[in-house]
Length: 115
Image: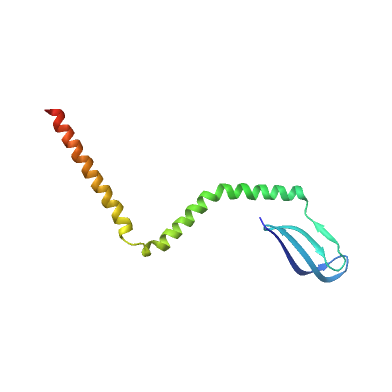
């Protein structure tokens, strides 16, 4: 997760007015807010952050296979019209030829065993 920093205007309780603040994020989670005027800083408890990250991480791990599957379906559906027809037909043609050869070999083997 990437650390980010944003500058926004918020109401500061210490200054008793709207002042510029620096907001720090870890990934999509709030880490701290500090007033640029009076330098008062409010930080989120690290233990709480670890709990939130652990929950988020476990959720991402458990949903990854489903998300990858959905992405693959979308990609294939989008690209299918652009695939050459031979891309699908040639492997099928080769499989049919292999099946025919194996079938002939089995027939020849069965005839020789029956004699």
